[in-house]
Amino acid sequence: MSILIDPPRWPAHGTLFAHLVSDTSLAELHEFAGQQEISRRAFDRDHYDVPRERYDRLVAAGALEVSGSELVRALVKSGIRIPAKYRPEKLGTVLTRRWSRTLPTEPQLGTELLGYWSESHRHYHDRVHLLSVLEAIDWLAEGQADPEELMLLQLAAWFHDAVYAGTSEDEFKSATLARERLRGVLSPGAVSKVSGLVMLTAKHAPAETDRLGHILCDADLEVLARPAPAYQRYAEAIYKEYGHLPRHVLASGRSKILSGLLEKELIYGTQAGSRRWEQRARNNLGTELELLHSWL
Image 1 (spheres, rainbow, N blue to C red):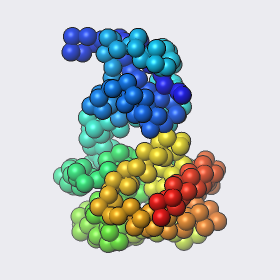
Image 2 (image 1 turned 90 degrees about the vertical axis):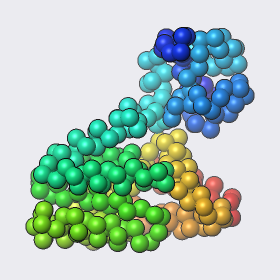
Image 3 (image 1 turned 30 degrees about the vertical axis):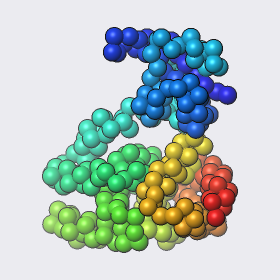
Image 4 (image 1 turned 180 degrees about the horizontal axis):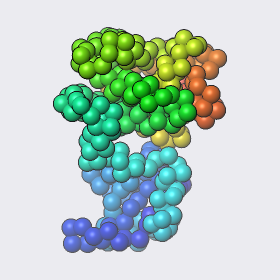
């Protein structure tokens, strides 16, 4: 068991609170909290807030006492921690700033797109995913794309899941939206390039020589290579988005997608992406496939 707790030093509601975490998995954390009758309402994305009055009992039950800095380091290393910029109260501001650097002449378009990404039915294809893709593009494009190409990549990221209903038409409709909203804002050639990049995210199979296509597709698939607990959180979010389907139908469809990725010679088409992410992604996909097969 890897349950950690830091000293109760955080004031709220007339008492002090400690943070209770797992450095292994959220499932382990929820199990421990349930055993100790801690309400799920006390869970805040990657930790439980527990009042000082319960501290000794939790330590006696097996929670390991660590300092606040040790707890944060363990959470970061595990991949479970959610940085402040990815929390709901921060995301809008962070993404608005990014849009203003990408296309400062069109603030209303940025607001419109942010509205799409904030729709309530999204569990994975949401603002967190958008920011993750944008940040992955920043890293992959360094030294590989000029400023204009970087702008096109970032716009493609903003549009690539703007329309999301969980159907095979999503990428086409998102590409159409890009053409409609960018017409007259960018040159026809630039609009066509953004639209084409968006369409690539349907199958993640750009041409071998499509440098920008590989950057965007690798950025979109970066999530596959996260530490196991973070990957599990991603997979669970996907399952929520398709929660209206019977479990065996979801498992069958998802298995085909993951198997198709594993059958590729390389999941990632950029050298940087392949070096950093390839093996971990394959490990994560293999583990999830085992779970999905157990559902069939």
